[in-house]
Length: 237
Image 1 (cartoon, rainbow, N blue to C red):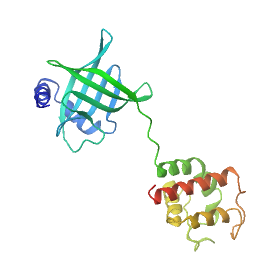
Image 2: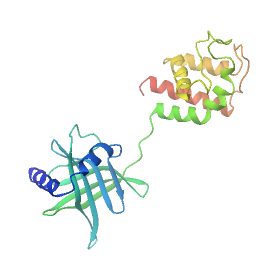
Image 3: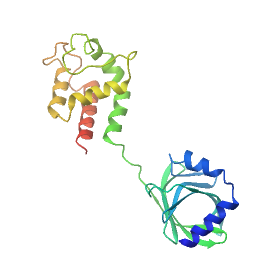
């Protein structure tokens, strides 16, 4: 491991040092990419040292080899999301290749020049979006315009008839969808009873504003699912 560190440090001196600013500050949003036969690792750790690397792919007698094209030392914080070199294998946790995510094991086969060989790979399932992310997407796609703006803001705004309802929204010209999603979240406050109350009132039960949708309609189902996801998020599930 120390040997690879020394090799990389020497390589950094001989390669294009301006890469440091590009990798260190612009590439952390996505840890690994594979474009035009170049595998870019924005964070590869060797012990407690971190590097940004560009590895070029070549096919040699059926083997997939990766040589270092560029390297730059970057600040080490932790190994979260990083590719990790354990002394013999560089493990890449996930990289998109043609629309599919893979994990890669690249075995070090040469130190001069530094060359890795693909020794193993596996398809990585895409992570399931969080409950909050799902709720936010559903709200933006099916609720903010179709329900909140079309139905709720007629009464549920500051100064209007539902001013004291505890559930107030803003119109599109006065605020954002995020504000209205937060209004639902604050009203729920982790309470399943609050979710049930909303779903009942929009069908006209105990609702001064009358029936706004039918039980079982797409609108009602979308609203119920969005509220369920918010409760799941609030419960930390």
